[in-house]
Length: 364
Image (cartoon, rainbow, N blue to C red; front, side):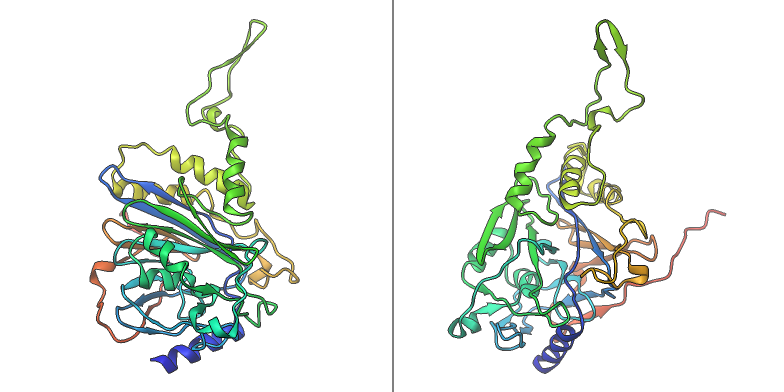
């Protein structure tokens, strides 16, 4: 197994700029104590993601500063995990473990700078692309993650095909108790921030995203009254006046604000099952239609069909009932994976092909 993991990681690192995604994520609270996580995955290259299942007690190889699997921190998976990989790599860019800890990696090319790791500390370090798989296989809560990540280093190992740069990501995590954190590496330092709103997108830094919220203090999900000026009444042309000015573009600060207001406007009496359905409606606001973001070949995110960035897949995860749902770009089917049915004692990773043909429910 160690040899297979080594070959798989090394091959993928040499061939694929895996982490160039621009994503949106949020958390919804159910009235029955559950929580629902939603996120999109945008990319300009076909990721060919598979649903990847990791059992307990599987040996994992850490990537050291020299970018080689096995020279970094080795560990054994404590918890079973299901999530999405990319290009066959034995790492996760999104996922949930059997304890309900759920989250993903999000692109942060303008802010992510990892720690300088000396040869002496190499064996206590992992690559940035391993942050999520390390968290989900080792920890049950965000409090445990905080302690755990303060004990290790995330090194500056590189991906050759990604302009010989580190994968520039940050990590968002939510546990079964509804606690959320964001883990960033800024100017070579670990920064862990409690996330009181459960929303995360891309650059700028998370604290800057939080500070930007005040610029939208005028927004509300409650309809505005007609405007009266010098005795004349001006009525809004339709419903939706409370959120007039909600940014609708695809820039990460705009998506952050949109995700915040849409997720916090959901009725508080919705159950976890209802929130699962609601999450798909919210995610629809971030779905990138083909061609809406066109990328030149010189762009680091370019290279997709026609040079466009698309929402390759979307995720909804119910961390109360331990069900992980996904929807791929090529169809509107929603697929589900029940973590309660994982063979936690399996001896190897298991991959599922999730690129299924479009299906419809016939009415007549």
